[in-house]
Length: 190
Image 1 (cartoon, rainbow, N blue to C red):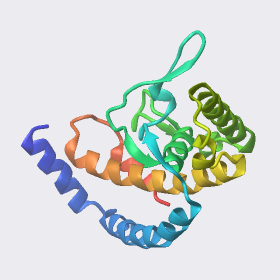
Image 2: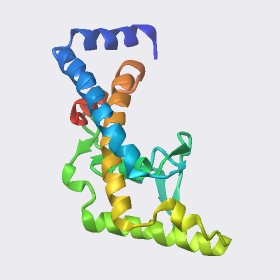
Image 3: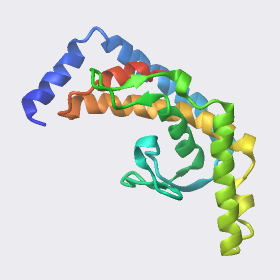
Image 4: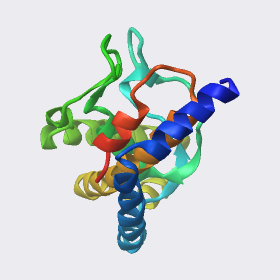
């Protein structure tokens, strides 16, 4: 991105009537993080190797299985973050041809049955892998309780929305793409 475009983007943010909203958002979410931190820690979501960008855009449907792709953000993280991010991303369609080039529909956030289906598939796969590899303690370590995992995912979805809002703010000043990054920011305010 050239320097003049970047300066223009930053200047637009500085001159925006939404600057106070941005500052209020950052302050409010600092408070939210302080509030959520002990809750998320007490959930006890295990730290596992995570994709950290799990969405339908990063899953290939192969003849007999699904395969995640684009592992550039992968590292160890809370399992709940990966699942919460996946659930929160379900409400977005990033293939719109009109500005801001995405559509948001909170009704597409997975309902309880969809979440159960997702979590049951995960648990079945973990159990199958534990049997195949003779790892007996694996199930206990990952706390394979459907309701616990769903609660964990929905709590971490709050963090995923916050993370995306902050990411989109940075992208609005750095990216040369004509995409509604600040629109995402204002949509994802919690």
